[in-house]
Image (cartoon, one colour):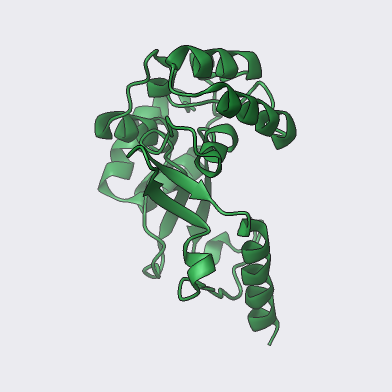
Length: 226
């Protein structure tokens, strides 16, 4: 997004501090314009399956499994996979993973960790999944599922603890409860990076994932209510 003539001014100010960058944006009330969309990174159903077949890493059983997952996933043809996955053969690397993160996060948002904010400041919290380095090129079905479900994208929220923003804020953060189930072995391994028998690295999704996520959500809500 580009705010016209003040865009470079906002970016420069943001490098010195998130507070200044956001203040300029709000004070001048400039419109945002869509400059470009990476249509070349789209992964429609047919292209995804064609690339999976041409890579030569998957047997027929794995290809059929991926096809079924895609049909049931609810993903449309407007989703994206990282640039490294569009090559044949794919080119996953640490650098490619960084480039994926930069495409999603940098340039438009300011990154900060989820820690208590100083008084009178703004913070943009960005959350995303980086899938470049965890793309799986084997035939273990539990590790093929992330290939079919995870796509490029991210989400961001602007946080402010300035009293003057109360009237224009959409929501108020009242209470935060963090629930951690890592002490339970099933929860710890429900989303787990590992190597298959052929030594190929990927992320395995357990069949218990939905039940474990539901249990964690129940614990979180119960704690919050109490």
